[in-house]
Length: 410
Length: 67
Image (cartoon, each protein chain N blue to C red):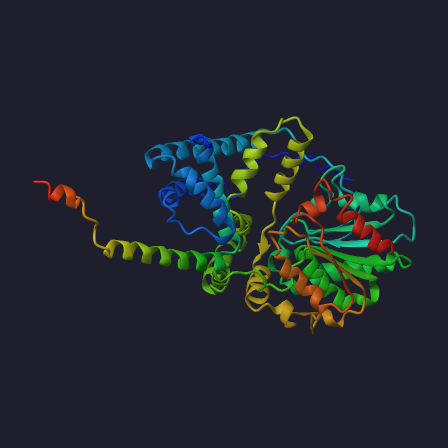
């Protein structure tokens, strides 16, 4: 058993900090530019905001622009200052994740298959859990009462969580195929051999679900069902033309990947920041108002620490994801090959559970539903939460965790 | 009878509305941007039309004739 108390290190998030501060300042300054036009009804609001804007216009017209601008500047400045204060409080918060990690059941290179079910009865159903390659696996074991794997074990299910670890010397040269041949396929083979009487349910979260589909297509004779939680599959769904253009700039990405030798965490975080430029401003303002010794503040810090503790994506895999998944939509098109064969969900005869959270801003629901479309035996559930809240939020225990437990024990 | 709103509240409401506009644009940039371009063109045309209209007489005929 090893402790993870060594995670107490200097915080640098929200990453990349400069970008988040810049986005907050840009929102403030652009609001000042829009105000005179909005006051005169000459600003083109989005359709869903038009009624609200029209109502506000009559109030704006009660004042001169010269009076409104300093008020708006002061208000915006206060909000940005509150956000900065929240970030400072986050940096100095005493929380440190100190959850005991079980010893590995199997390992290869940097990857470890962690056994969270040592107290579970022999023959219990197994959840073989595959997380994303770009975020740490411990989101599924964040802290007491926020641990999906503990929740499964308490329900009598034997969880094995694949912890990819940080890419080491060996993994830096990996292609996706290597992750399958060296880690995913042999790890599941090992579990199947060691636990021959236990049905194995293959569960993937986020990008881990995408990988799990390919794994299921190779090893479906060894698994009882496939569970994909917020997993992208139709990569062109919900991808706007700007993002498509950016992704299609192969020369730029070659330079980035050759320069850094990997896809750096801060660059990956930049993609997520672009999904909502106000997210940092709003959430750190909210955090600034919390009592720092409250449970809510501690949970915020735990989640934020995880968000900023990403894993760089190794060079060849990043190139494959950009070019194959995002560029050619190879998964949805049936052109993604693993183990010498195309990955085709249509060929899976095992039952599958597809979770598509209603408020997912990271994986567009249409992308995850693309997998359900192609699976012959898919059951779709829609947890009323976001991408991360679904697995680690305050309602996860009675929501998604219970759905998964019911599915495995049905 | 409605009273004049508080200027701080109005500024606050505007900033929040602006934040919503920014977030929505980030989440559906294609549709949002196309809408903004289309609406912006309409507003620009309105501006142009109003600029081409002759200025109303600044002096009333009554005053003009009142010599």
